[in-house]
Image 1 (cartoon, rainbow, N blue to C red):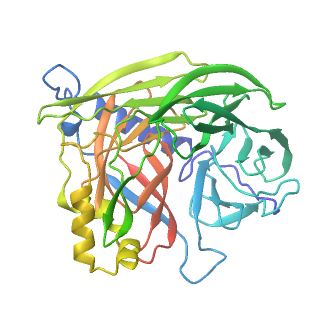
Image 2 (cartoon, rainbow, N blue to C red):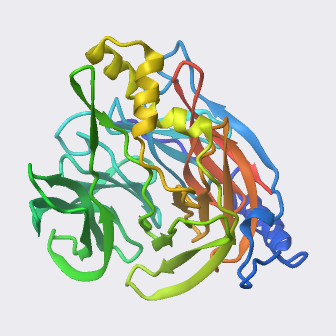
Length: 411
């Protein structure tokens, strides 16, 4: 494990001055002309101001394994602008300065102190870096320079949901108060099981691995598979996107997005609830949107992954298989309005809209109070991994499927 050389800066590429400027610009945008509202008075997110999004960092390599990535996981950024990036295949945390220069490496694959069997969520508690290893069921603590401070047990517990369902609830991350979040990480439905949804507990544990409180519950769908018979072969039909509430837990608390799809071509609403780590509600706000149907491009993308397997099983041509799978899809008339939620370290909320099957995704940003700030588009190959008002880090896949670390400014 290499020690990270740090140089303190009052202002840097991701320093406090830059962050404050980004926050100020977005706050002014939110406080500018009144946000258009829907028929019932909620902010209409389709008419929010368009924000400028500029990529100013692109880190990786196609040829150099030392600077290139295999699989990028969690990302966190400290107050001086150092980015800690989980490289999942190598089970290590790579550290980059604000210019994208690699300045250190934390951990490696293994079972020993400071080593990882896998890396899940990651974050900072003051100047302490923590990284959850769900396979080793522990959270490891490091100094900001990469020295190991200790570990916190994060054991898993299998619980029964009845109806043939079993779920694994385990420690997934460290909260701002130093306690451990426990959430459902795995679910199994036995053959003949009858569940279509479950209510999973949201638990809190102490630093000795004991659950000490229940802060809430989440209703989650149980994936079910429809089958068709084609050329004498049973084939699984891709499931339609569900409209159950989305839940995203971070050290700043829990954000839930209630996003029921509408059944008619009329204005819809979705609701965002932000909770403190202790379960108290910070806000609950509703937003209006214009529903979008499933486009032909999206339908094609839903069945695309199933086609090669189905062709190999049936020995039929691609067009015949694709048509059979599309005809068997059980799609609602309109999509759910939100497909992904990211919670910023400052409590901002970043919502990815419906999938139109095109080259980009639409996003909207809410400030820490739930006020809508604006909207922007990102290439669909970009996944946001860490965010704060005015800036976010993400991973981006190139045309060959190779991941790169990217940073974007938003204003």
